[in-house]
Length: 496
Image (spheres, rainbow, N blue to C red):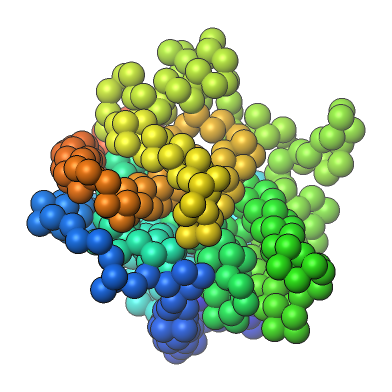
């Protein structure tokens, strides 16, 4: 959908004018998603459910409950987005007003405003919201778009897990875990982009690794990975690093693997065409950077990019100033080194998150208690007998670690929600490996772990759901009237 609307806008067409064209874009997007879902089945090491080691009823029930808790959390977040007013500051300051301006213009356009971020920031989520608003005639779904991206990430998790030999129960549990992360639940209905970016990033890393780790890359997976990468580029400025760095790493890995198997770095015609197709499909995501270059000469506008003291792309402020690092860093961690800041927020020493913008919590207690140990365990396993099966999962983990290094203010939970993609995959893969090892009492220990994970993740996810409305109402009481009035500074307003 994003690719269609920005491409049409770039060609000078008016895809947001009227309702017929937006409805057509929606229909084509749904058909394309269905085709990809049917064509991307299987993978590098397709699961054989019939040959899997047996599990207990307790494991099956816990896995099923995790999945359904995740689905239930997404449904309740959707209801919150549809029924409650959107009052988050960034949403009413520039994200929603720019949609209304685009609808007036009939396409994605550089708008007249004194707020640089309305034009400079990648606004892929808002572009999709604009299509839906044009098709439905209202803004009711404006706060619900991020839920679609989160579901995309959850489905990509399950697909890669199944492709790596993980049984369906553990794969679905991994998806449920990603859906019920406290900050995801809190952030989804806010019209902020963090939850959407997390879902797109997880989908990008999972599809990229599934594609690159396949012995003969398939076109369907190339398209799925390319579309996911395009969305990462279109949602946040950091998406450039999140796409370029992992793509470069996995391309090198693919060449190295080819050299090990065939003694040559040359790819087959099918392999070359698949990689070329992936890169081609990513291109629409570069729309936002390219239009910045056209209008300002700076692809990262309004951020100033400097290297070794030399200004490469002049802007209005540095990255630290745009992110307002000084004021956005809580006093509890302001004096701590970077690593300890991250440890503080991961351990949630100030208690669980209660706000979509919580700076001291959000990943949940299950992250340090369950996910991190599983990540370490999976990274050790490729050195042993199960190397090939776990390699795609280990690749996702390593690429996620690379993204963590590239992410500014990576202690902030809402900026790093995508970490749970690696964590959920690691938990699913480790549970499958332990059960399949046939070690004494292995199934019993997995059952106990699953039940404990269900209690910790489920209870904190439910706690977060209970604070979704409270967080929005608390912010609305604290917001100045002038701030909220920014949401209505265009002719259509938010209630069109």
